[in-house]
Image (cartoon, rainbow, N blue to C red; front, side):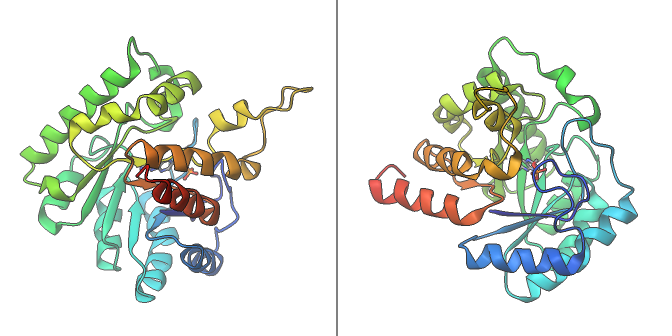
Length: 265
Ligand code: PMM
């Protein structure tokens, strides 16, 4: 899954694709690099981020979705808002990537039940402005699995076909670096939920800290985390992940091909 952030403030590629024409061009490049899906988002979820107004989020993503879907690309819309998701589906999106797993907007699960798109339910404990204060766990893997199981119950109760639902442990969302590494190390345990697993590690801060400059201690900048992101993609694929969300698609597509040929997938 290639990431097309139509935002001025994402941590990973802030502002680079904010103009619709630039975002559309970028999406086409990611498809050429081997993306099977494009995830188009108009809200930055970086820790501490402020939310855009719904009208602004719609203005950002709709023209990009329309153009890329018209090309025949499979489009996921990265939104927590049912109104945005509905318009995105009208514009040709086939999947809703809801980082709140239906918790941010009570209208989201009914919309998914009514319209029937594929749905990604991510583990989430609250909006970005204060999510890091919620990064408290005794056993992060057990608790994330239990909380995702509760979401699956809510999704089924809303009348959504679970065959169309994928889960995501939400690396970096109410999780510190140690939590993220623990989730990755024990990724196979998520198989108990019996749903395909999406992993979004690409360019995240925990990789920047792992790769910090040895002398200054400065984290590696986001745009120089793609090799490490590809390594995570290969290992995640080998641990049973269905999909990896990547800003630089080519290295992750290659890494996943290696994992597959290795026989690890
Ligand atoms: N991470 C970000 C945004 N959307 N969606 C899913 N399903 N999983 C993620 O881990 C995830 C996401 C934050 O990264 P970005 O600001 O670079 O897009």
